Length: 81
Image 1 (cartoon, helix red, strand yellow):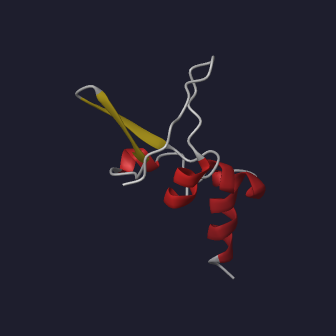
Image 2: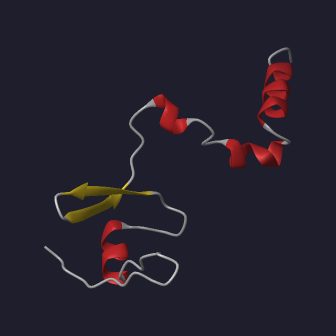
């Protein structure tokens, strides 16, 4: 078990110590799950478990194609070639 001290900042954010971020491969913009168990908090990397958790996951990726609909249209047109 690794134990590190973290501080709650003025805006209620928590800085996860570098040693723990590296161990769990936590990067900026990763989503974490915070679970209350009795008088303790558990923080773990969030893993989607349902299809609803995945809704919108490709939104940013498809922007370079002009949006999801534009990408699908281009793909469907290529089927006729």
